[in-house]
Amino acid sequence: MASIFTRIVKGEIPCYQIAEDERYFAFLDINPLAKGHTLVIPKREIDYIFDIDDDTLAGMIVFAKKVAHAIEASVSCKRIGVAVLGLEVPHAHIHLVPLQTEADISFSKPKLQLSKEEMEKIAETIRSNF
Image (cartoon, helix red, strand yellow):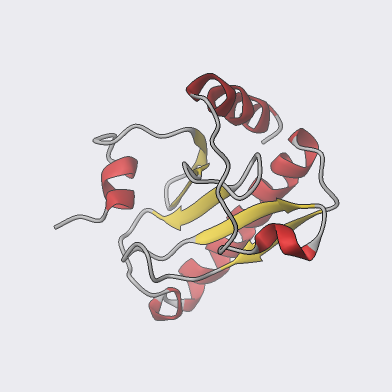
């Protein structure tokens, strides 16, 4: 069975898309730690990030860097934090989280509840800076 992220890439499940190319896809996390919290995934479904071949992993990091710069240009923050957990969805992904402090990337804190309109506006702003 395809992961939820594979279904998002295929357009079977809607998302707040940020960017994509032939190998990678970026979209807003629907349970964000901060406004602009984005997930970057390889389109090819691979469960564990350290099982990704070197070329694909390197490309994923370069793609994530471009997305991070677009987030920085769109959302007020000091830095973009990077996290890889890999337990909640069996599809490798990188979290890009706008930070003011280190505490902003704590996955145990309550997630933001943003309206569909606010999520769409954030996604459009980041897309326009990609």
